[in-house]
Length: 302
Image (cartoon, rainbow, N blue to C red):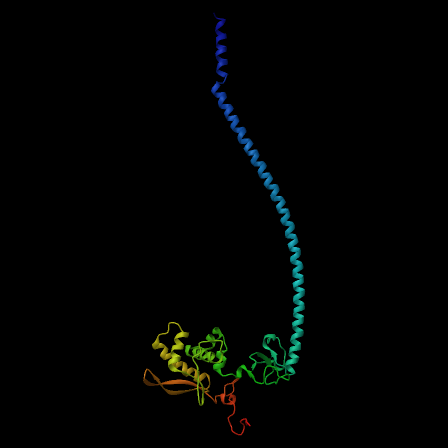
């Protein structure tokens, strides 16, 4: 009996160290999960290595492209610098030639002249406009030996203030004229002198009046030009605009009262008139432009 007892104890101890079936199955499942996760990570590592290799190739290509572009940029900079040096040299030559021609009395198209670089006696250069409508530069009071552009030459300073304002663009006119009536007077003159402007309220006159615009028509014209102006304010602007145009024209224009008839009723209103004999720079007088009716100079018909 005593010899059998240790044998039973050894068998019981051995059974305690052997894992159960459920434990083995759990271990196998865990092992499968780990192997699957390891394979997934291996695949991810392989993908990242492929991406790394692709990006390395891309970087190499881009570095080569950058090097090529830097070389092209340096080449183009050198070409641009050479072209700029050549252009500056040519400009200096042209400026010198223009300066010498101006000193000989030439009248040069304003668009072709950089007045800031011209080197002439006393540094004085005059901008003029001719009958052909083009602007020119010349030395003050020098006659054009080639007589280009027509016989009448006008410097900007020879123009009436109303003409100077009328030739400005809107921004320049706003900075030069500090009141609305002055700007309206300039626009009114521009409408008369420049057919391309349109909305011209001036009418042809008769006898000793070349052109005129009535106060009533001027009021409607102002309301068309200045949006939001009430009729009562437009009436005030009419008087102020008339005063401005008389002042800016140095009283070459005038004001007359005329009797009008409308709807069977007579009324008197003011007119701004341009007389036939008004000496307007660049325009002369209308009487000079009319054909002569003197019997001694009239054509004789047989």
